Length: 106
Ligand SMILES: [Zn+2]
Image (cartoon, rainbow, N blue to C red; front, side):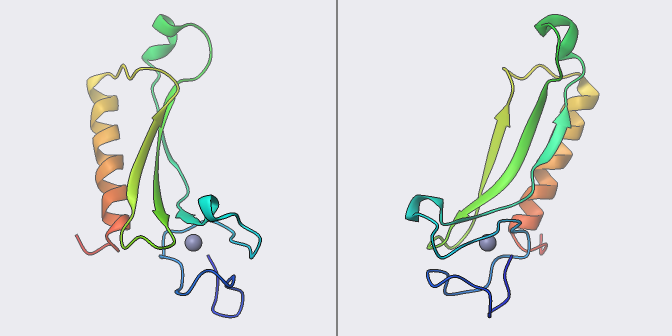
């Protein structure tokens, strides 16, 4: 996020309120995008079946500096395997990120 004084030359408008990216003049064009902090949902039910480690999915907003609205990126450490409670948490997290991407107006 940047104020008008700190904004790099290629960024003609302020960052969306959800942007957590530190933009720089030297950012290559393919990296000129707004990205939110990730929302992580731990999937504890996957651990016994998938072996050791922590499994999760992350949801972030990405918006290219010339795009008019963000896209929601969903990544996961493996194929998703959720309990019903985890699926509800994941659904709530998706709705929350979609609301933030729309500027909190939905
Ligand atoms: Zn930004």
